[in-house]
Length: 237
Length: 351
Image (cartoon, rainbow over all chains, first blue to last red; front, side, top):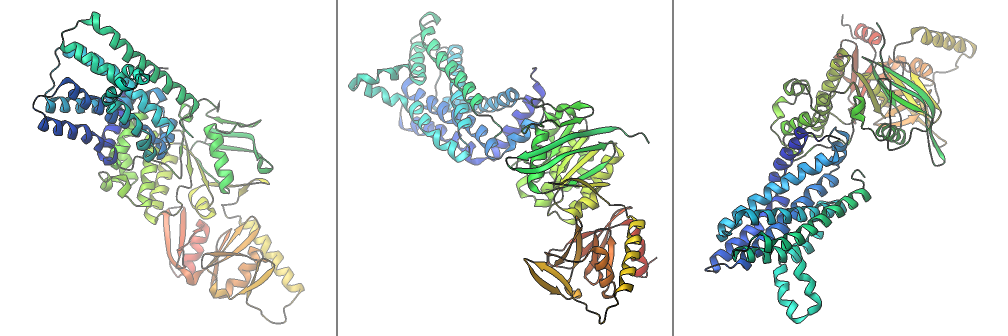
C-alpha cells in the first residue's frame, strides 16, 4: 500500500487548523510555557535539571496529550468513520496526526528553551535524543487515545503520564531512601536528563549511545504497543 | 436510451436473530435513475451496514458497476459513496475548510465553487459548521458527497426535518446528478419525500419488496371508481352519514371531515392524519375519495387525498414535481402528481 503525501498533508492541515480552534486541547501548550516563565524569573541561572524539567513536562503534556486528544476526539465525534470510508488509509491518518503533534511539540520546545535560555553544547545530539523521546511520547499518546472514548476521558488518563514523566525528576530524590525504586533511573525522562548532563560535559557519541539506546528501546516498545492496542481496538466502532 | 446498470442487488436477505427483517429481494438501479427505498429504521440500518461490509451479504450479492462488493474493500474503490443521516464533519472548521479537506482527501476534480453554489453555501462558506442550522449542515453533507463524486450515491434520510430551501437544493442536486448519468439510491422512512424525490419508489418490508406506483395509473383508478358506483347502486343509503370512522386499538373514533388534514395510503391501508397524528381508517382510498369529495377534498396523488381548505402553498420543485404545503401543525408537505396538477389548476380557476 502506497502512502499518499497529498492525503497526509490534507490531514495535517485540517488537524492543525482544527487544533487552534480547540481551546480545550491547545491550551495545554500554555502549561510548560508558564512553568518556563515562572522558573526563568525566580532562578538566576537555571541548571540543566531545571531546563529538563520544563522539557520533560513539555514532552509529557504537549506531545502525549495532544496526540491522545486528536485521536480520542475523532473517535468521540465519529468523524473517524467518515475518514475510514474515504480513500485515506489508517497509516496516512495516523502519520498526518503525528505530524501535527510533532510540529506543535517542536514549537513549544523552542519557545521554552528560548525563555529559560537553554543552549545545549551540542545541538545535533540533543535534537536526536529529543526526537526519539517524542516518538516515545507519541506512542504513549496513541495508546491512550485509542483506549479512551471521549476527549474528557483522554485528558483524565493522560494525567499519570504527565505526572510520572513530566515531574519524574523529582522521583530521583526518593531513590536514595527506597532502593526498590532504582528502576526509575531507566525511565526515558531520567535518561534524557542524564544524557543532557553528559552532553554539557562534552561527552562524545561513544559515551552517549547507551542513553540513546535506552530511550530508543522505550520508543520502540511504545510504538509496538500502540500497534497491538490498535489491532485489538478497531478504530471504527 | 441504453440502460447502464450501476447497482444490482441480487437475492439479498437479512434475518436478525429470530426476526426476519426482509426476505430476499432483487433491485437494479440504472445510470441516471433516482430510486428510493422506503423502509423502517432497522431495515435501513442493516442495508447500510451491508453496503459497508459490516454485515455479510450471506448468499445474496451486491454489485456496483459489475464488481461484487467485498468485505475488506472500501466503498470508494467501487465508486460508491454514502451520505449518512448522521454524517460528521469537522464542526469547528469553516464550511470551506471542511470541503477543501474532503477535496484533497478524495482527490476530487470537482470545482469547489460549483459545489458551493449548487448547495447554496457560497454565503456561508466562512462560517464554522457548528454555527450553521440543521438544514444548512445537511447542505454541507450534500456538498461533501458531491465533492466525493462517486457514480453511485446513497443518501440516508436526506431531507428529514430540513427546511424548504434545503429541500429545493436537494432536488436541484438530484436533477444535476441525473444529468450527469449518476445513480442515486435514497433510503428513507418518509413516503412523501420518497415520492417527491425519486422516479422509482420501492417499499421494503418483512414481506418483501414492492414497487410503489408513482405514475398515475389512470386505468386502475377508473376501474376502482366503476366498481364503486356498482356497489352504491346495490345498497342505496337511507341517510347520508358524513363522519369518517377510524380504528384506534379496537375503539372506533369518528372524525368530522373538516378536521382531517390529509389521508395517506400505506400498503393498502389508508391513514387519516389529524394534527400530525395518524389514524388507520377502515375505508379504502377510493371510498374515502368519494365520501370526502363534497367536503373539498382532492385526490392529489395515487396515495394521497388532501383537504384543500388546509392547503397553504403549492410548491413547484421542478417541471414535473410538485408538493402541497399544509397549514396544519407539523406543516406537512404532501406530493402532488403532474396530472393532478392540471386538474388542481382547473379547480382553482387558473390556466
